[in-house]
Length: 249
Length: 249
DNA sequence: GTTGACCTTGACGTAGCGTCAACGTGTCTG
DNA sequence: CAGACACGTTGACGCTACGTCAAGGTCAAC
Image (cartoon, rainbow over all chains, first blue to last red):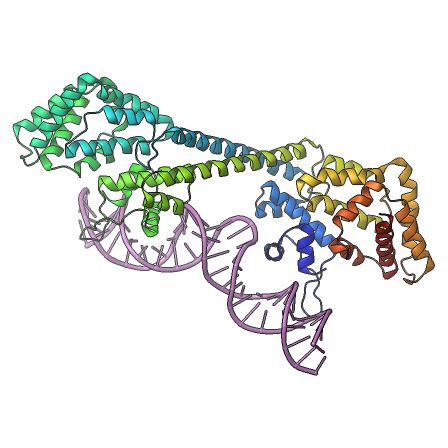
């Protein structure tokens, strides 16, 4: 038998056979005078063994180990481990399909930041129109949801929901307006401290708890990211607000 | 924000961020005087978008296409295709786990050729001891089962089962003995034709049908593989037997 | 001034082959 | 006998989505 016949017999390509030779999974057979590999039936049997294990999902390295140990106990171990791995993969795929199903159910489908319908509702009802600061907040919130691990997403949405309540919207507009006014002010402007205190006072309890749990004392990357987007006075407002919120606890 | 902060914020490594820059999935931001990349909040939003799509299982090429088209119709297409693909993967994994379960149930676990318990029974009951030819047949049969696609395996086992019946075993021993005797005979020896006829006559109908369906007129790689393992006279026996079997139909 | 944490580009490694490239062998045919 | 054609040989790069050095530059702190 030459390599093409062997490959056809077992149902693989010649490249695969040579690859297995290279990895030492299949012994190199005798060569003919012309340099062709000359296979016997037992080579086909060996190749079929390798293929079967590979098709089960073992890596070729694992196949080699199993065939080297030859006698059975190790094989069971490997297969059990493999089965557990496959089970994990099944769960992962099921989770992805579940998320896909949620996305596919929505009528408008955008690669947008609003992952969950719940979050979309919150963003819609939030007082986030018109102001650059409000735009930034929208980005921050989307980002928080996006970068959190899926298990915490519901918590985040729950934390933010109070902000979307009717009573808060007018207050929200007012606060953003006052923040905008401070764009070119000095960080020492008395209105800075005043606004920070007002914002801290109107922050819902759930959000305060969430902030305290997730923000490290230094403020963390989230606060840094916000500070990079605003003028010094506005940044001071945020820093003070966090301080005031911390004092509340 | 520098690259490390950005990466931490979104929950990826810096290498990933640079990789996305390289692929054009994420625009290169401004640089500081020192050559550092300087990110803004919107970069984090973009990165989070990419990540979300990637985590759903889209390839980065697909992510780029989706983000390029931007407006939604194409995205739904891609996601539906992806879902179908995931469904196929689930089936494939389930099938592998089913095969694994069968293997793990067996008490003796060898990387042997006998995949299915059914096949193992057939091989055990077959008249396959003692003779080199019988050993070869065992290898051929294991190989046939191994190299067939899983859906046809049951058919093959069913085809072979009649050979394992008690009535056939004595006849089988006799035929193998006569085949062994012809090892050094001439291909023209009258016993060759006689044995081939006898073998063809005792071949179960199911097996005849199977051979005719699967063997091409030339004999195919299976016959070639056998011919490579035996002496010329023995080879002639097999060739004639196939001929006689063909005449029966 | 030096440490240490962070950044830069560049390049190789991963799994399992697919797919050229450049060339030799073996058989059939005119 | 020459040429065509199928098939074989080794060698090397390509693919995914980054991980992981290597060799060096920047920046804030002590």
